[in-house]
Length: 100
Image 1 (cartoon, one colour):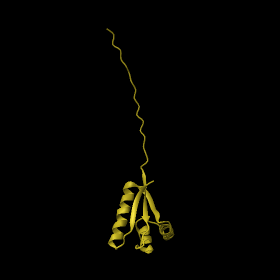
Image 2 (cartoon, helix red, strand yellow):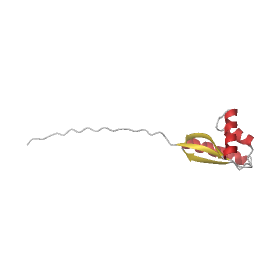
Image 3 (cartoon, helix red, strand yellow):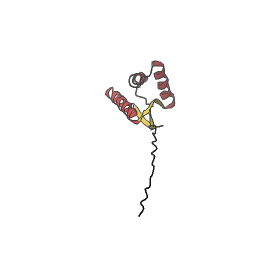
C-alpha cells in the first residue's frame, strides 16, 4: 500500500479599508448669534478667525455650512460637544452629521 501526501498552500490577502468620513454640518437659525458660532468653530473645531468667519458666512448665506470632516467617532464627539455648549448658553444651534 502506497500513501500519497498532498501539500496545499493558502494565502490570505488582508485589505485595509479607510474609515468612512462624516461631515459636521451647522444649520442656520435666527436665534444663535454669529459670534457664538464663530467661537464654537474656533474652540471645538480649531479653525482660525478667518476660516471661522468664512464658515459662519456660508451658514448664514446658504442655510448650512461644514465645520469639519472626521471619522464617525470624532465627528460625533465634536457634534455632541457643540450641542452641549450651545444648550448650556441658551442657543438652539442645530448641528447634523452627514456621511461623505
